[in-house]
Length: 554
Image 1 (cartoon, rainbow, N blue to C red):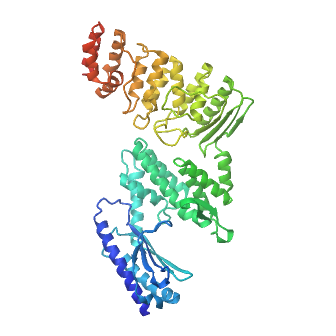
Image 2: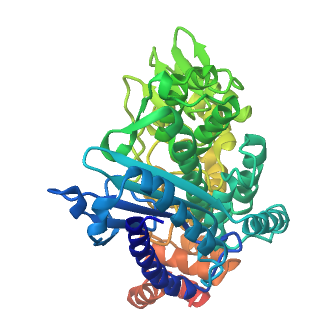
Image 3: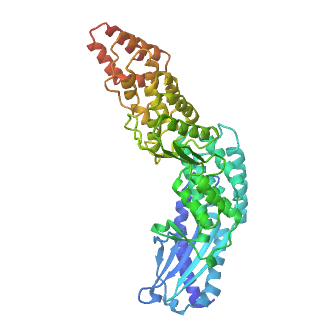
């Protein structure tokens, strides 16, 4: 080998070994490995970055992770005077093949932790000359590790994904399973292969919102990685802030478009839309630029499964299940117009339209329910407007029954404390308007996710203002208090000041668990201690009744 190339190689290799020795110690200290994690290291870039005044007075740069274009986390090392003796031919014919040979031996036959290297590894070499850049890359695959990972994935799917509850995978496996799903070495990148696996785990985790949200985050991240690194970069150039935007490459610079890849990209766009609706729309627009008629149909008309338009002299309405959006324009502000609009939405829900849709409303009337925690969205406005018409209450109740679903959320706001379960606005409006819908309100309160929704916490206040505090509504009032979240505060201006009210409250609490009783007493009296204080202060015949209540919960 050329002496300059050999000197350069030795300096580079010494640097790599020094870095890897430190990394090996860190990796060997990791104990809780996922069964789907073949290893960690899958990339190495060695580069010569020229000096500012003299290209030969630069630095050796070593990156052990694929770097972002806007960052520089390279390890940097000096090199000797031999740099001036190197040529493009020497680097291509002697240096890089020798570096690949050493890397291949290290990759397959190293003494590091078995998880040090992943089954696939990319080696990149870059060399800056005065006016040009020399680039080479090589991919290594450890077939033994790959086959082992395939077998592990098959076993994981059989025993942890497809098995019946209560069996679930460990949370640490979610990230790696998501990335296995978009790995062509492991699975075919087809909707009919990937979608059932995503949905199966989503269904198994549905009852645990934190875990479900975490899983959705992981598979969304993996899908985005596939879309941007495996698909879009073949046809678009990154541009804009942090490369977040995409510009179509000239036709001669694009790879040949494969229909199966485009189909999977459309699936990715739709699947990501559950968490990132803006990304879904952006991806569909990019697919349209690639000539996808399917993407254009999705944006304009949805999937085609649902009636996507309705028009009369009273309203204009459209729906798109792919974008999970409904648009309604009220042409004439009257009862019949809202009746037609509710019928349109109900017919969609009966056919399986996404319950967590967002609604864009064009209406000259702006009414909202008297709850500060509710977002003033188009959905809220629509149902508040419609609830002004008592003749529409049965239609609103039918809507609520169709829409209510545990652990589901409207798309009218970004995920936040103002997110509410589908059906919320209709249920709250009906509960304030008529006692006929008290059972509906109670079912809602039993279904609502009290750990992740707080909009219902203050509903008891306008409810009591609308109906008062009576023996008849005590069961409903108690259900409202039990449906509140842990952060709910004691109610203000609630008076349990008649013996029959205390009797009604005792009757409701008698069959409850202690923690439910504590919740109700806290919301009404501020807690057991304050109830005890109220008993001491009371001098009327109510004192004995309150004492009975205290004995029940004390």
